[in-house]
Image (cartoon, rainbow, N blue to C red; front, side, top):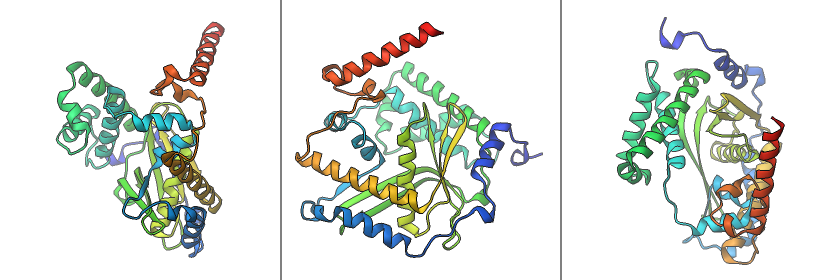
Length: 321
């Protein structure tokens, strides 16, 4: 028996059942959908054309939108804070790279070999993580290696082996230019499977996540579905977050209603981002679990109060146990 024919674990079969579809389950969309969605998006942002120059366009990605729809003050604070690599950030990037490599192996891969190959490739790359990998301590290197190995092993145990007939694409890049290059929206999904058949949807977009389920993850995928629709004219059939810690997929069928929701959220987020950048909008504070990682958490009264409530809840849960 070859690796490709090895029996699936129950977790792998569950994912396969969630992501698979019969021809009857694949919706067909109108040929005018792409033009309609673009018109809706550009019409809602048309007044910004006079304020943004094509020579200095506004660049937007999923993280920008997620942040501005969360705590706007945290968004501004993080914009002003120089980015620095750390073990928590590096280990996720390395795990994602190792998982990407696993999908192009002809034989059943060994998790730690994939992690070492991913770390080596990233250290030799032009990515900013290369400098961190070249200079980090041995302890930090061992920490990210161990974490990434655990995540990759979990993925290989719980996600079904990828077949070439599924047309897999890793790190699929998407880009949408609006208002004559005044606004540029970009994205990069971890994995896509399948492809459209004319106006009939067939593609599945998958993002790999560590940690807990968050509503923003579904919004990220809806943005990717919108960008994919604007790229080829036919929406993806499905979008799913795959949670490595739990070994489960959270899928959502892509409908015209989902895409229109993504248009409204994207337009609203872009407007807020622009107003914050030019100072015509006072940032709204929205405390959340993310306060734990906010760069101004020690000087934000709302954040401090919220963190105190979270700590109280943790204590209460501990007492109940």
